[in-house]
Amino acid sequence: MRQIQYGADLMTDFVRLRPRRRDARTREHWAETPEPGPQNFILPLFVTEQPGRREISGLKDVWHLGIDELLEEVERALARGLRHFLLFGVVPEHSKDACGSVAQSDESLVPRALRALKARFGVAHPDLCLISDICLCGYTDHGHCGVLARPAGGRGGHEVDNDATLPHYVAMAVAHARAGADMVAPSGMMDGQVLALRQGLDAAGLGECRILAYSAKYASGLYGPFREALGSVPKERDECGEQDEHGVDSDVCAGAELRHRKSYQMDPRNGDEALSEIEADLAEGADAVMIKPAMTYLDIVQRVADLLHRCGSEVPLVAYHVSGEYMMWRGAVEAGTLEEWPSLREICIALRRAGARQIISYAALRYLELQEEYSRTGTRGAIHENGDN
Image 1 (cartoon, rainbow, N blue to C red):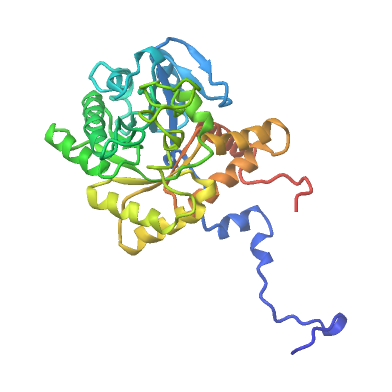
Image 2 (image 1 turned 45 degrees about the vertical axis):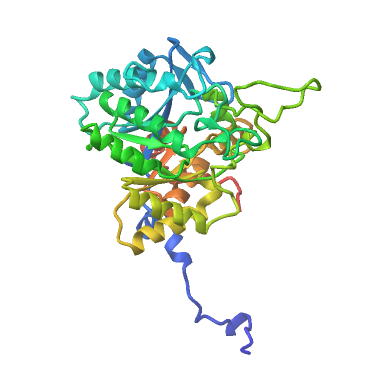
């Protein structure tokens, strides 16, 4: 083994990479991942029946918006270069039922919002892309992503009925596409949901409407703020509401499996299964695929990006930086633990480096505001010289 000596005999035949980091211009030259720009973001927005603008208590700087206020928010985002928006409808509790029927007509909340957005911005911004979420969880009185039914044999509690749910997804998607949705995004993780939507849209003469599939959506503990914002927290019991004299669910009510969504969303321990979900959605006609959550599943993002590259697919890969991930970052910034721009920039670069073409983020507009500010001051990529190591 060769001895390394110091002083005059110091070994000098090692690889030198530090010169690539000498100054900002040199670092820019050697950068492998382009800086994310407006084209790389999708901004999620919550539209409500109630007029006005109200900050969501569990999501700092995110708002419940009436349709008029939604138009104002989109106008502000368009001025920053954003063109992709993901809409979620928030309806009153009293309007919900067992199958989410309030969301399945042409006069439902989201279709009305879509028509208003297209009327205001469609001509001036032909590249505007409106994406609508397709799921029942925000519209059902039990908070699940599908309709409930007794399992075969009629024993035990209710469960989410996969095949009975699909026609409700199709009805929503057709209503949204007729109202102007450029893409529909089925998020319920029902088997066959992409195929059902593709066939339903084509049959309705809406074949130009594309599908962004929530392909690998994990049963994560990081969705809490979103579920509170949407009013979609799963109920511990289904709509029958029956209990015995001790207050315990009767056998006709839901058991433990309806207290969460683990029976249809993916197990966080599984990686290979995500590839199978992606392949199935591509075969069914998905125009884009998504991984959710994002930061805690960077390995899955990279594996799916590699899969798409190997099969020569041009289908975009989207990563959803979910509400819990957003609030961990936002909370650390509010506490003074993290600097806002360097930390947000690093998060977004990491997702792009892993292979995501687009990022769904509640911080999308803030990212672009900060990017412009730091570009103007000449410190676009600077992580402050504060002693970090």
